[in-house]
Image 1 (cartoon, one colour):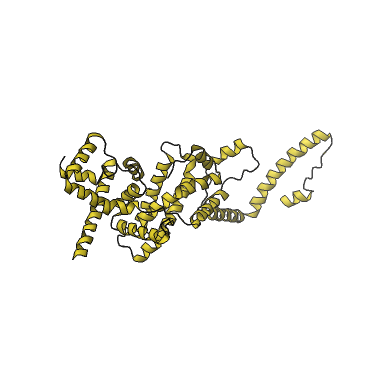
Image 2 (cartoon, helix red, strand yellow):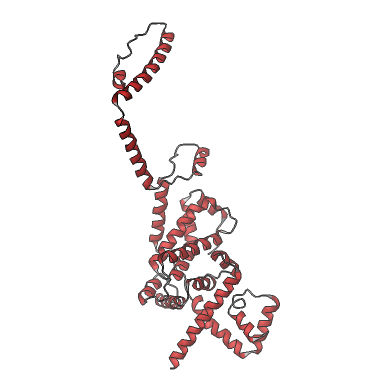
Length: 187
Length: 168
């Protein structure tokens, strides 16, 4: 997500709908992608995305710019996604093939073709489904959204050491699964 | 630097570009010399980095924005209607949040009905006597002013007009 010009933020805070739509266009992709990859359900991710932007709309007037708009969006997104998971008790590690198929339909087709893009997204979903939401969130923010440790810590309201530990645990888990896959193939 | 420490960094700071200076250089030197750790680095990238970095962008469907707009418009209708007022007035009131949840309207309605019912249960005589007394005092005052202005006499029987009859 690119930085948002202050002028656009001020106009959106004053109620300019066009400016708020521009904010939405600049950040909805990030919000939706994170929500979808953490929650693993397209309908729920759409709801979370709506909630996030309604919270942003209400909070824009009071957003004093102590942190960057980007950081604020990250925090609201992670907060909303985790609240949603806690409320709905959707800490599910085992998703069905239909869930993965539905999620991969949200992919934006690229030059390589729609099918390749959907296959890659399915692979991502299978990998992420193996992790708990805490580890999944850290890995998504780092590998897919390319946030720094500091930015991830701000988004998740934890310290940098926690980020570091969660990333390590997430990667260890994926390596273990990858090794099991190799062993099963050999057997 | 020992392999255990290097592999720790290969799954965290070094991999993510968060390791700098002397420590980063020590990891690079170790990797040049240690085949096992080089193999481990490749394994980490294959299992936990490359598949995720290949993930493409995702965009929400148009319906998400439509629902956001509908929700915002629903809130806007409940806000102050200050069209035509100067900007300074609109700006002042815009800072006051007006968000009345729907159940409050129902509650106010019920309260109004209860109050009217209570008033209706008051003895009719008591109610009309109080009203008559109050109106009488006001009419005396007003006719007094009028006679001073006109320099003439007033008709003491002020229960003559349809409005007065209606009120009493």
